[in-house]
Image 1 (cartoon, rainbow, N blue to C red):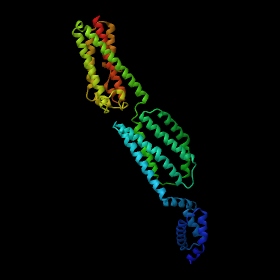
Image 2 (cartoon, helix red, strand yellow):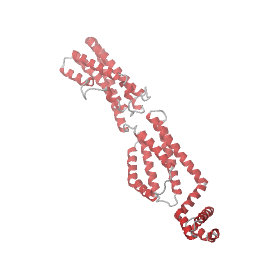
Image 3 (cartoon, rainbow, N blue to C red):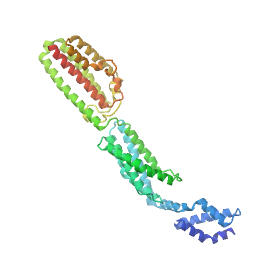
Image 4 (spheres, rainbow, N blue to C red):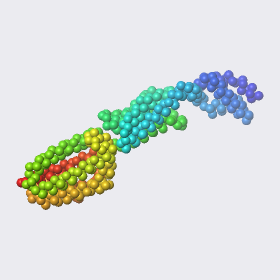
Length: 401
């Protein structure tokens, strides 16, 4: 008897399903059959058709029927599902490539720049546009087109700025600042509105996992950026000026010794010996810095990884070379102050070799270099070497007088 009552209402139920937006015939037939079965079960408990039918429709949610139809059509769309799978695979490939490149960058291994650039290019130029298009198609109620556009531009500028920052290309800071404006003024307000509108949805989106992976690579990269390109270039330029000055002073001292060495005697030879030993130790320390980043034998201006930290540990801290350099410098200063009589020259010796002092701030402590960027340590050591050669020049000239 219940079945007869329900059969008499089939046309009405079908019309209401169509009115609610469920127009896909095959899905409509399945939902209709499901509703009829559930209504019949309710009527078994002594309820009439009308109350049973309203109870079932309320539990299903009439407004969700059109959304269910939209999802079903997308699931049956093989082309769309294939595009979805490919999009996520591309995103995963790009993020993993970027993460691998960031690790290579941290350890200054070859191929880091290529992997970083390629990984972020895949994410920014291929995955993100495809994802936003796909996500827009998946939503039955289309959001404001401005939201995906602002979201894409924000991510595009963040990823682009991060790559430019790592590669020390111009425009990195501008891209990052503009992306911050997009996020704070555009993306976040729109995203919060979308969250409130779709708060009932709890489905996990694989795209978020990809975003987290890419974000992780950005964090890893930015934590390794110790100096800006301008700072690296500035310290490198000062280093080259020091090296040029050392070459001129070396030549001047050599010419001086050739001309007056015999008349100056043993003192001049001992000064030269100290200078040579200290300069050799300084060269050993700077070479150790480059060895630490696998750039041995490469001129400092061409070396990659000049912003790398901790290179000084292996170069001259842990092996004690820095302490030996300081001790020999102190011995050299003591010897010079014994043979020099002119107060002005003594003062110049003390100033030139002040780094050998144990006094706070004035003294040179190798341990202070432990966490410095490589180029800064390199520049300071070359600066000390220049002071040593300059002191040699000053003292030799004073001995002749």
